[in-house]
Amino acid sequence: SRPGESTVFSISKEVVNKLFRSLHDLRNKKLLQFESDEVTKILIKASDKLFELKKKGSEWHLEKPEKIKTKHIGHDLIWTLKGLEFNSIVTPPLPENLAGLNAPLFTISLWKNELEEVAALKVGKLFDPEQEYIVQAGNQQYRVKNKFIEPIPFDLEKFMPQ
Image: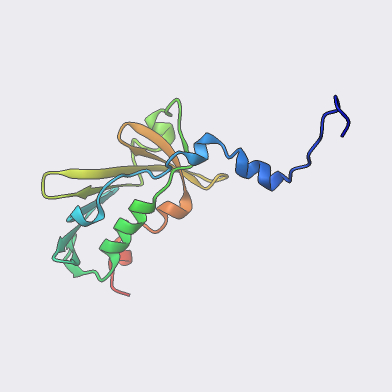
């Protein structure tokens, strides 16, 4: 190019997207922070039911509503929750009734021992077009894709050994 002329480069859209990935992608999108191996109890409350899973040694058992030996479900749940990512933060937060958080689909909490809760998640309404649930963790609302919520069992059949 001659002096005084600017050079034009052509960059593929893919490269541009990689270079300018929004800050929001670089932010950690993991919703819950906890140490997997310190969790000894998992509570899942769904409308009129309470499921309680307890860990003895490395084995998980369903204690409530009935006692069932559950092979992998405890480990799977922890793995699911550890990997749970939000799509976006809901700001400003929706009123509880619109978010479905006044009568949540279910709440799940992880406990280090009988008294110390290490993580909790309240799952509200599914917004169909986006296939996203509004969930609450701490006092913040998030949008979470259905694929992260679906594996979490909240009825007894799902706990039954297959």
